[in-house]
Image (cartoon, rainbow over all chains, first blue to last red):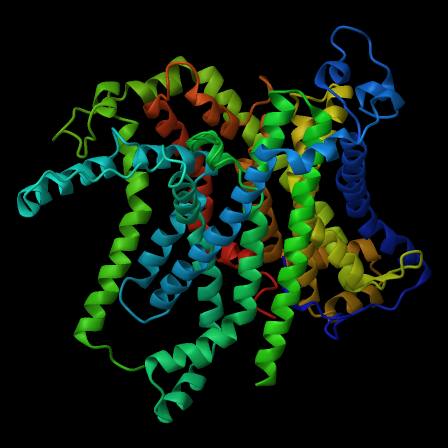
Length: 338
Length: 286
């Protein structure tokens, strides 16, 4: 999970032991198991997925509960009758898929942006000297430790329109305001039941859980900035805001970009919170691509199409990562130039 | 350090406390809900035990005594999947990390050197699991590995290896090579050097890798959902299934969430600095 934005060629710190004959064996022995596992459990499935995505493979044929299946049909492979590009023909016209892709991108962009901004603010605060700093830092970490599924449930308890404390707070504010305004005030925000607000609620929940990640990374970065730089700038009469803009932020830029990239790539995989909180609803307003994949596979048994959606997701991720890396290279370079 | 004004201080503490409240309240709510009677949950929110509702330990008793077999089984499944895949990814990851840090590789067919290999390995981490879940499903189904621990362990090991290789390579790069060389001069084999000298020195890196592998497997949902049905179900899937027939039984779900979060929280509190190291791995050097 290193700094992908700035991958250096073979670094000098890379110490190498001179190799003898015996070492040539060990050299292989050390690296091979991991590489073999990745080939078998990551690359092979990926290629296979590609193969499955151009078949009309269905669950019944694959599971072969009724008839003893041939090896090929059980694995969704090598049955020429199944071959078809129908799955990919369906992709651009499938409004549910397009909607899920749109939602996923929305989560990535809006969600990660929100997490970065708040995470940065919290890190700035925690970076001050004050009593109880350790205490606050531990508390701020807690949300990250909860299982995402549990976060989803707690989120439902918090945002439920009837039984949640938030709903009661809204009602209380309403009754409190009524005499002041002179007419009946009802504040009701349909957190989970409205197609336009529900995605935001999902983002809020995911942010609650993952802002600590941003905070932790950025705080670690801030603490590695030597105090002398600030001292020197202060002597020159720089304001607090100026220090932030001209020192803290630029120095943190590489970490920021890495943190944003990591969070974004994780966000593309979002599924558990949504599944628990809204089940993709209302309608399909909050459905993510990963949800659509497992729904297609488990509820409809359409393995071919599920594989195709998974690959669409992969393409989105690759495009996003490539653009992001190009963008961050340019950003870092421009900054070094000035 | 410049002294802050009183106003700034008040603002700082106010903001910090508001955020601390946001972080803590859901936990408070889970804890109290697990002691509430259904009626106290399903009408209006009740806040303080003994004041606006009478707590009950029925739900905990239900989960830990009546349904003990189930709870224990799913908890154990999660532990098995988490710990085993964690051990595998630590071993394989540190071996590959050591290799990449100490030897010079050249894959002539691809023209790849150490950094290309390392980049290829870490890029696997960003592969969305959803893109490969179908072949896993088919293959494990074919091998009758659906609903077994083996299936989950294999999948989780594969997902954790990239991260552990990356962290361990970083870690070994920062270890001075002199000790190993002198051991070699004294006649230790390459493997002995690795097992007796390098590994004991690498405890911080290993702990970080182990923690992250375990927590990943502990919380993983998608593969557990797709690859298990009944016997090998892990806690997240069991938890997500709580919303079945009678609506969500908030009290059980709260109690189960607390059971789930406890190990992670203990790890997190005692080994916080390893977590920070893992999150910041590599990022701080750039």
